[in-house]
Length: 463
Image (cartoon, rainbow, N blue to C red; front, side):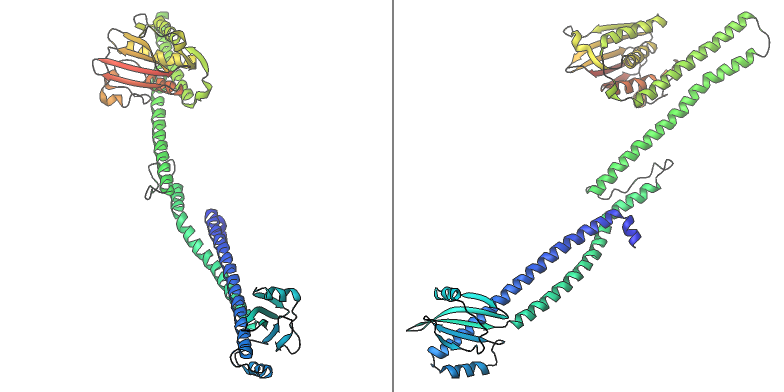
């Protein structure tokens, strides 16, 4: 059991906190009860002493005016006397009128006498005796009365109370531990259940979920948050798995083509023109393979890119013109029209923070897609200043994207059903969106089949 206690640190900690809280409360309550009872017993004893003293004084001075010797005998034979009870009565001249203290055990000092004469009720202790002093009045005189006795009964009661309180405290400590251990176990049971369920989840069983309980308390919210994390992990692993499968397929196609062409080329001697034709085909496949590899590396780079590292000041209009020139260099039939949609836009409103190469890749992909999927190979690019952002709109009149495909075009290697006939890998849009996201921007895509596509990019500018 002790090993289990040390293993379950949270449960042990909660139990100890519960026990310590109970211990503090019980000790405080016990001391309060004990001292309250002691005070009550002392006050009650002093009141009884005064009552006895006043009763003796009444016998002497008021009701029967009994002789002092007879009073002493009456008090001595009284069965309800306090233990070793002694009564001393003095007049205001300090003469002793009555004294049952035969051996002089009670010593009364002048300051105490003066206090009683002034009307104070004085309580004090003389060795084993508790003494109560009070003032007594008759029709003709005043007297000072002192009653003394040993409060053995009160001490016995207090001793019994002390034993009871110690026993109750010890029993309470044990009960606090048992109850605390039980309730702390119940309190952390949902956490234990979550831990057990998490231990069952592996890379092959990411579809499993943790029980969320009522979803309103802290444990329920923790389980709900964990399930959302599992959903993201499951989606991420599925995307990664599909990405690897698609990338392997795309890489295998040109490699297989190269391998086949070279094997055919080596079967027999050929003319220089035939070698040149076949090698040109192999070269095209190698270029395609290099392009695909570069795009895959860019996806890996942008996925791990830290936006804080993209801190260069860049003119976005210059990026657009550079991208246009590079595309036109290799595709002379592409028409890319760049315009400023707002004549009030100035140079300071076109400066963004980021990576020049990545932003050029992003806009090049959007320009190239617009031209590639349009019959007239034309894309119109417009810049607007929009609040604290620069808005770039890429619009074409191409084949468009179906509503079903719009939900999937940002998945790597996914290509719409109407785009199969056009060469490509399905990497451009996912790569572009990741680059824009890394630059704290947004990207929105609107498209209709046969009417074209409109892509809006928002990038924050330097304020």
